[in-house]
Image 1: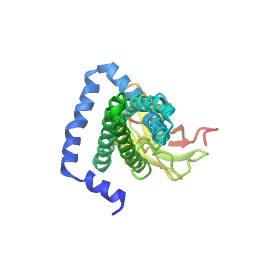
Image 2: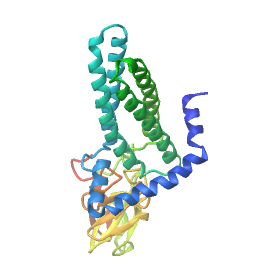
Image 3: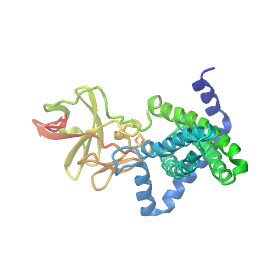
Image 4: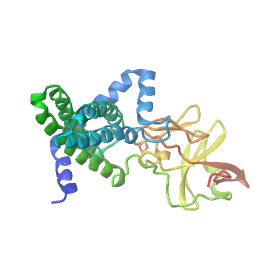
Length: 296
Ligand code: FES
């Protein structure tokens, strides 16, 4: 049986779904309870300020540090005792990084549903298990008499975090979490193309139209017409089915990301990548759009 099939079996267990049903709303409520500060912290943890998800960058710290610890432990076991302090320090650095990885990962997990949420929970539980093993290892490393057990626990933790890293790859490359869903092979029109009669777009309304190969969101607010890529950059939600917010913003119907209509910038996560913006003009009663010059 392949590793992927085993993990899939685990993710399909009813208790995984039940745990997700309880934990996800609790985490979202905790952010909501923080008001404006909670909103800003959530955005920061998603990585909206970075333009990319923050979680995968932080996971490099525990994985790198614990890889170094495994190498140094093996050197120490082979008789070079001078490597022991370095191994212990690497375990501690990995634990500090694991806290950051856990917090950012949990935040990103609040923007997942169904199979992605289940697999994400398994990923998180495995990381928690590995962190617990490394924590116990760090304490046992303090005494010479328990050093062998400490190294064994670290190796066990390394195996667990390796499987968890495999799941992380599955979540990105198979489930497409964290990738920009507007990065399509379809090409945006470089010259103005007519997409809708002007009269068919009412004030405070949104429409999904086609511009060449791509779906485009048209929105009208304050007499001004805006155009963005229709597919949400987070996980592909249909923006025209979301909410048109005051102040020139649109909220995705799937996980609540908010984008500026004028620039496409992310106002609120979980999205971290902006929505491609299109130039708009009206000619002969038609709304026309094109990719802004220099943004192909
Ligand atoms: S698809 Fe998740 S916020 Fe749009």
